[in-house]
Image (spheres, rainbow, N blue to C red):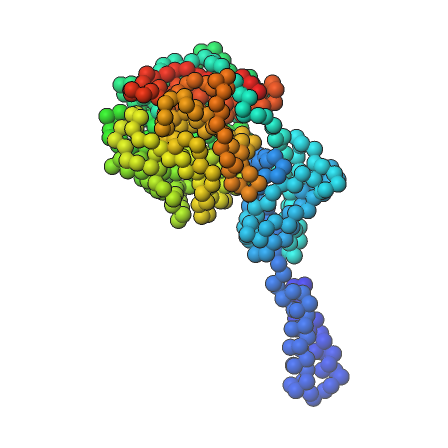
Length: 509
């Protein structure tokens, strides 16, 4: 009820009283007016009625997706301070979830996606409508794509090789770029060290569903990197992981060593280019105004729910940084200002690996020592693995979880549907003694014990460090993930080892 109507009602009531009780206006009618106005305002909520909740997005993504059982982030306003309910609806099936209070704020909710309502199950793959219900009412509906959780046994992987890189190199980085359709994807490789100097090279190729790459690599000679760089960070933004437009794809090159003679040198530059989702063509590189807060060589980089996270890396003096930075991916692909996490990484590292899963950021192994030459085998890494909540760029406290069997640095990780493979790199013992090991993310976000993949049948026998890796966005013909490894330098008992141009992929399961 509007305040004006309240006042009008009170004045009308006072007029009637004045007709009945003449001569008592001051002593009787005015107090009655006050009481009536107060009562009417109270009955209307006094203007303090709780706001209707509003969903802005899910996972800071244009087209968010999730398997059931995994936590999602709902961003918006008017959620209030105490948990209400989140309702998931699909074709007459309704599941209502009350999130944990620790995952509920007025502008954000963390909630696990239910498999159904306990009687009926959601269809996967499919979509669900998501709404938030509070004392203020029911929000608008947001769409979430439910994706199938693929089951596979990492211990059964076998490996093959596909079209090699145009040149042997290490210290380059690679990302997968989803294509315009669900059956197309591309790979882009940037920078690297060819044994003599750091590179400006940019290569692209088509990813096939079986894990191979097509024919010859395309050298992007019209749009090479503006500067030479190796041992940098690289990431890719698309509508599935960021709030960019539906037909947009962007790739980023962050930090890295600009000259192979630097010890280790490094840059804080961030460069961005678009990628055509129809052809895989790489556009012109732009240096963003959002430089990293410090120069970094060998940082761990991950893009997760609309934010870029950067962990550690070598500073210009060769010491590892403890800092963790985050920046939002804007709709036009540019980055917001970098935020420095108050929760620094427990042990400063470089050449670690980072990935996001289920609302958490994980960091695996890395080099805790100082280093002059990023290309050399140098130190032995750490086996420490830590994770922290990562919501809208803000990191919680770090929690230590199961460490890897080998203490690795300059290594690789692959993650798919909660399974994690760590391997390669530099570690104690003879090369190939435990080339790959694996674990799973458990329901409480910790990692299970690591198990070594020891069978010679299941080894790549690559034995390299400073290589590049990716997980293909395409499912294999057997509905399993495909892991790729590119180049690197041979890990040998008598360094330096030879550089490689070999590209490996798993052809089973």
